[in-house]
Structures are given as structure tokens and as C-alpha cells.
Length: 406
Image (cartoon, rainbow, N blue to C red; front, side, top):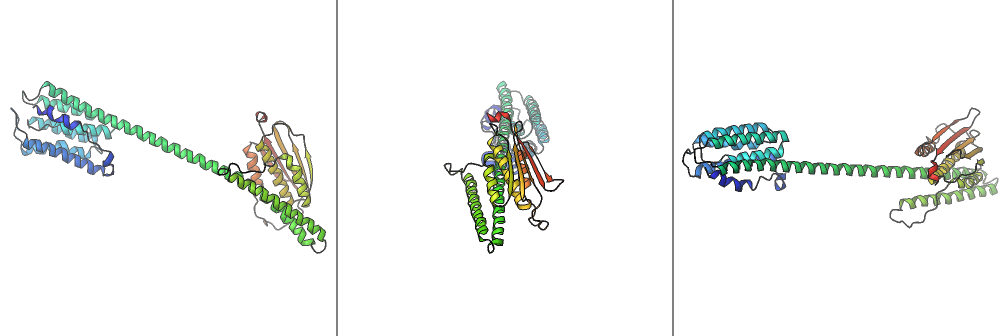
């Protein structure tokens, strides 16, 4: 049967392409179409190919067996092993009839497809079963129909079909792994960006709260003083209004600084006011003294190398603590700032409430929450609560590594 070697070479040079433009087609429909085309190929060869010595005339049984060989391709994705078993059994039965059409093309296509869509174990089973079936089929052919080149070309074509399917499947797996890795990296990048944005928003929220709460508290107290004494003591009212003006301007400066930070990505040259540090605490105390809060300040000698972040956070803790005293305690407060070891220790105490307002008048505040967050960033500790003899005490410790000083 010389046609064994003459026809399969052209067919196998163009293996079925199940991707590309076919991707949008339903896979079951695509497999059914390929199975029908393979059947039509065998039917055309059964009907039109000339017979050689020893070959049988095509009968209805030949077409039935041709359908049994080709149609299992339609469900090879879902039942790969059953498809291979049905096809190979039909090939052996077909070879017993000595019909003229070569049954290897559908087997080549099925081996390629199973190697492409199934796992490696099923692909090896498909190759072994197809090799056995084709070997039996060739050995059952009449003498003179099969030559040595027919054997070699058939085995070679089957091996190429198997290896081609394995290669394409391996490449798909690698591409899928790369795509999944890219998706994971993209998700991680988005998560890091969201975390960075959240941390920056939290930092800005703390800054805004510190600035607004402090300035608005001073403004509210001084505005209240001016309201009550504007008729009886106009000179004191003018002093209170001057304090309101000063704090309003200071708050605006701080707000512009924070807005400048937000615009920094688009305007790198924006001039920003330096962030406050513990060296600015005396100015803060003088400002609060104008608002009517007497502050006793004790500051130890400042060591070298206090990190900027610790310095800023410590200042904000002092500012928030004194703002709370102004709003809820007073009329005096004691502030001590020390540097034992490699840490900053802040203690703020007051002598009890100046005016007892209604419970829950101001709602739950965020001052202590902000202070705890600032301390937690540096692994420090914060204690806050009423004192046994009256008043309120806040103590914060912010450690910093000695290496940061260099």
C-alpha cells in the first residue's frame, strides 16, 4: 500500500491549529468539525482510491469502521483515554478488512490532540496505543502493499504528532505560568500602592487633625473669652481676638504646607515650611499661654541624632496633649521631655477639668488614637489616664536606634 507513505506527509506538515483564529469558537464544535473532516477524508479515499493487489472493495462496513476511527476525536478533550481506545480498536478491526484508505491520519491527529489537551500520562498512553494499533494494522496488510519505508514513515509521523502535541502543551503551560505570575505581580504592586496610599492618607489625616484640632481649640477658647468680656473689658477682648488671628494664620500656614506635600508629585519645586520639631515646643507653650493655659516646661539636654520622624511625632504628641488640656483640663499643665538612652520620653499632666461640660458633648475624639498610632510606628509605648489625685496624665516613649543618629 504505497499510499501509506505518500499521503500522510502532506497532511502532518500542517497539524491542527486549535488556537489563534479558532479561539472564539466553541471547542466542542471545533472538535466535531475536525472529526467530520477526518471522516470525509477517509470516505473520499475509500470511494475514489484505486485498489491494489489483496485490497478489498469498500463496503458499508468500511465506512462504519471509518466513522469509528474518526469520530472519537469529537470527545477527546473530555474522555481522552476512551477516545484513544475506541479509535485504536477500530483501526485494528479496519485493517482486518484490507480496505484501501489509510487509517493513520485520524490516529495521528488524535495522538496530537490528546498530547496537547490531556496530561503527560494520557499522552504517553495515546502514543503507545496508536503505535501498537498501527503496527498491527501494517502487519495485517497483504504482501507487497507495505514496505520498510512505510513502516519508518508511519512510526516517524506518529512520533512527530506526539512530540508536537507535548511541545505545544508545554509552551502553553509556560505561557500560562508567566501570565499568572504577571497577574500576581500586578496584584502585589497594586496592593503595595494601596498600602502606601493608605499610610500616606493616615499620615496626612494625623497632621490635619493635629493642626486643626490645636488651632481650632485655641480659637474657640479665645473667641469665647472675647465674647464674654467684649463689653466689660474690651482690652482683654482685643488680646483674645489677636490670639485668634495669630492662630488662624498659623493654621493656614500648616494647611498650605500639607497641601504642598500633596502637590509635590506635580510641583517638585513647591516651597514647604519645615516640619516642626521638639525645638519648637517653647513657641507652642507661649502660644498656649496667650490662650490662657499656663504650662510648666522642663526639657533635658537634647542629644545628637534624633531622627526627623521621631522629632516630628514627639512634637505632635506634645501639641495634641496640650490641646486636650486646653479643651478639657487646666488651667495649668506640666510638660517634661527627656532623652534617657536612645529614646524620647514625654510626660504631660494637668490638674483636672476647668469646666465640666455635658457628657459626650464633643463626641469621641481622635487625639489619643493619633498619639497611639504615632508611638506604634516607632515601636514605643503610650499610657494615658486619670491620676489618683485628680487630673490627667499622658506618657509616651519613642525609641530610636543609635545608628539613626549617624
